[in-house]
Image (cartoon, rainbow, N blue to C red; front, side, top):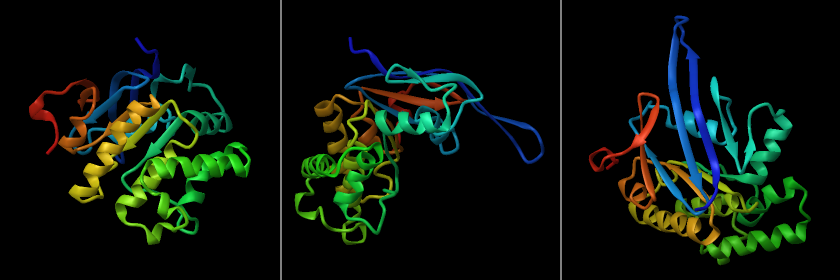
Length: 234
């Protein structure tokens, strides 16, 4: 059995409301994701799915509990160390691609590599390889505004893979796409899990995407459990 590349242990997240009362968003989440495994997380809006993804990606700290990414504990690290850990081990794909509009698709995919200190030749070769893999060989020099929504999101997937991460976190990745482009993206994401042997966590309301996962979990009442077929999105 593959070792876990992402672990969450007893995650709690509590916020203070405007009236000073405590709001419990996460109440003891446990999760383990292996290399080459895709896990879908479903749940109602406001259940805390995006909050959980921020915890898993070391973008926010839990009130209690801890996260381990690639065997490395997140807790207790400086902001600089956390940034380095994220850059080297986690790839993010969001509903909106967050590409830098003044740069080409190629330059956007090169960005994580350049930030890590990789030289331009190596960064370019890796970016070209990944863009070809997502079907954008002929669109590398185009800026985001010259790409379709599906092409922009495929560029974002290539960027997420640039550093050969151990974990991909995708938050409603096809939520802004039409059915055709959404299905293309779903096929791409599931293929990446297999081809790159990356662990992937996908938050989605899309039944077709959720069904591609090895496991479908429901976030309800601040905890995760296995989802029943009737609880998976539309």
